[in-house]
Length: 386
Image (cartoon, rainbow, N blue to C red):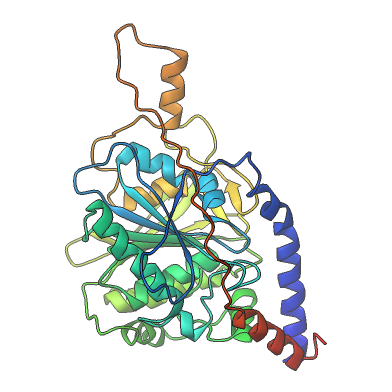
């Protein structure tokens, strides 16, 4: 155990060193924030920040998309990189970002491995649902179209939200994440990330079924992972698929496979033939969110650490899987807008400028430091820290 913890700690430190530049870059003025902080949304037992982006033009009865950043990231930085606010402009849905605070986790990871934050009506999971309820009331969003996605620790917390509040979310997208209840402690978290943990499908499914009194229908699930991910072992994608195929009661084998932007996509369908689970394994990609930066009209975001330009726009593909791209476009995509500016039409057209919201004031510093103490205790017990 001591040897394993030492190895996992070295791997974690290596990964965190790689994010040092990202931590600084995401806080520079070069990364604009389009998000507005919202306070007073509830009791906030997880002590998270709530930020939103509401496009100038909303679709009728708009959808609500919850986005959860990865470790060391900020909500504004992840939005800039993954391009979700540009998609919101184009299709008229509302964005809600939950943001972790360093007082809760030194690396700003969501605490997906901590029981007090991953159970229904407790901790960070409860805070996120309070944010959802506030946004639904504030903006008149469609309760039947609430979605959640996240990267890495945010992906693992996405698994938590789908399991603990399946009646709230129509669908979720887990990017470089882990199955629900893969870990309930710091040592188990390292094991799940760097080694992986396998269980029979029914055991994974039982963990979801026992997380709430809900008995269906269940959220649709989109799973994304890089085949060369050294931070969260790629086998976790397969374990997530096992968990949710069992919950949905479908066969382990996909209904069909196809190639999208050069990468394999596997799809599971229900009895009516509707897609309910999809999986993308991005060949050769490391740990991060897949992007396509280029001239394609569906290209969004900006490349950076853990935001990887591999030629497939995951944010757009996820939005399409959720059905968000089926309605009329309310604003041109960034690429189409650029083309329109370089070739202006001869007739007058109405412009829809992108509204840039200023970030609200900081919340008072949290006094929750138990997660840092938990990590320190675990490392001290293993002889890795004085």
